[in-house]
Length: 341
Image (cartoon, rainbow, N blue to C red):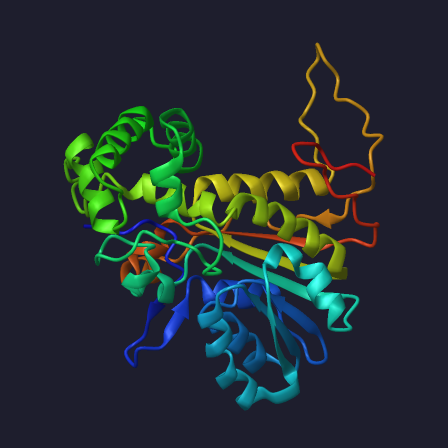
């Protein structure tokens, strides 16, 4: 069986966790002596270590996972005052970093996906490779995936699985879940995966590729919902805009199309790029706020062939970059609304 995409690290021969597209991230972030950076998704600490080793700079790392906080002690011991660990959500990076006495930074990097440690630990419930409790909570608090599966009505489940998992057969999956939980609560990852496998069957294997387990999209949807990952990403993008100094670099690696579309839309909008007009409908005059970012990289970067061969999970990764202008940050959007000046 395959796991859900979005695995943020691989391992080298010594077992060290290497984040996806590390070389490309460093080249784009371009660490310099004396500058300050935010690693908003600390995870295994791979980006943070690489940034600290690349220049005599300072990194403020953020993570809500208690296990990641504990792992950061080794970097603190090694790099001292050049490294600071902040416990919390990266969507709150502006308040977290300013609460530490820093008003502006020179770079922000975000790696949007579940970390290798979370996937590798069965008791976290992120993967169905090994049986574990149906949990998926990055912060180990709040509503769990089991709560969602066992309490949401069939329509809500179907909508959630369709929206966040892009599962075309979400209604069939939701109906099967409701039938199964009527017999007994669904509390284990393998139990849920088996229900979905029986409902959808195993798809035919494409030449040269591993078959994707039919539960992959549902697990993705549950994880995104339980951790409010899309809301977190929107808040994180706005937080980076607020924190970055002029010429500051925003670098984001995303794995899912939902997340990558959000990043692309945010950067395009904040760069002031409007849809082109036509001879019938001339392009509208932009009277909105001044662009807060400049896009110097066209489109998204993809992993190199060598990395894809060594870590097949990196194939879905997309790196996007934006450079902060001197314009004031846009006001944050209201819930469901659009940001404005």
